[in-house]
Image 1 (cartoon, rainbow, N blue to C red):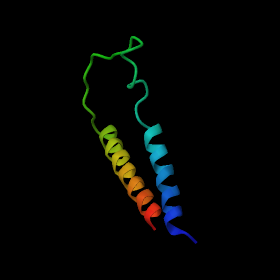
Image 2: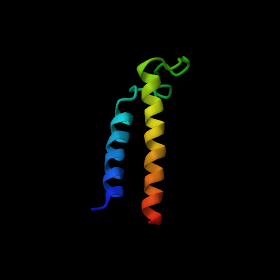
Image 3: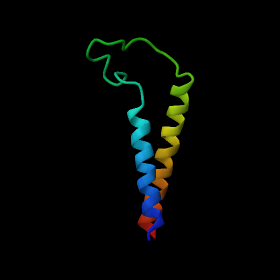
Image 4: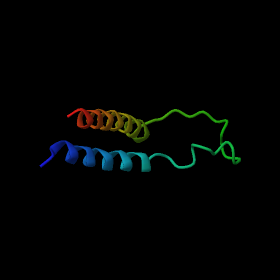
Length: 70
């Protein structure tokens, strides 16, 4: 059994979940009349979610490269 493939699948599910839990409407809200000019800092759960998204993306990239080379 290929353990790297299983790790890659689990990381992809975690990454998809973390991206889907991000705040909605922050991407193109300024182009469609939303609150584009307001700067707000991330606090609490948003900050933890952002960090976990970055960490899971880096881990997913690393596992993908490792699987490619092995």
